[in-house]
Length: 460
Image (cartoon, rainbow, N blue to C red):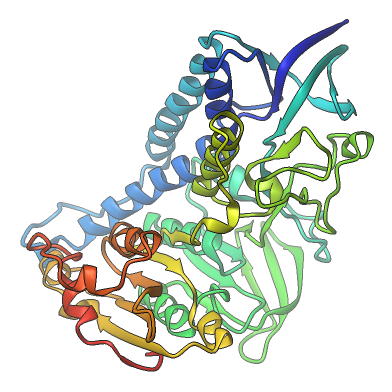
């Protein structure tokens, strides 16, 4: 049995549902296929559940600091993990159900549940049914990478997907991986009450960031009692009594650390291995990411790849922007391109890191003449009032064009404030637009004009 559509969308992550709605509203018949949970990573195992956990951990942490703010809490402040998980489940589940109900209510859209595999460039098989279309959009996302560490299959371990379903407090959580996911979960569970050790193979945490950002983040989490092990080579896992031991070769410290549970947070891999891409002739790179051009088309005409599976972003916001690029190009004859967007993202530790544009290393490599400034959050009034003075504001500007090249705001509200600079970057306006703006007092953003008035030659 076969059915013909104008478009087939495989996956219901951030790009898929919005694209389905846009194409269906334009009068196209659309089939959207989902093999597991509606909403993809963000809704089910990523942004929404983890930031819900971050919020619970923040509330607990703030309550423990009550004396600093002039109040007392009777007894110990303890996490009730079953209630924490129930809150997370309710918020995440609401989003999951919302995506499914939205799709099922769309006119011209057929929702099909099952595992989609290509039969040819224009045909996709789900169960025993063949779906045919001239346009196919792949939005299958990614999953946690499980490296072949010695002993990894001999012990139980968590990934980000299974960690969000924990309803108990690990006595000692060992996090393998000192980047974004590992740091967020590490701080969450330390605040819940677990002992936490983060094991990182590199010489510093979040290695893609500037060195001063890595150092500041390490200082922040260590002050909360998280132990950090860097330069951890040759990682292995083994059972040790009721717990788990992580072996490593390090320049400093014991060659082994034992804990009750292990979280593997060592990167992501695309869900492209079982789609039958070879039968469609769709090319992938050595890591399994689908190769796309600047408008997200694959090497096969009529097939696009959006979201985490194309390796062009790996964030919810880049996935949604993929949808916008494809939809506008198809329906509005626009010429939007991936290369037009400015890299931006956040690390949701507390305080958060908001990043946009180029890093210091990228700026140095470009050979540009630079004006730069670095301003401590301890001199920002809003941060002082909130009792959250960790971190700094750092901005780099092209000395010739006066356009902002990049910024890192590590501190309270940093994930929001950085977008003031991002918008000016998209406008290709000089930094003086922000410097001369009047912002609301008291906020963190109001310090941007002050910070930009202190630009000096060279990176800071």
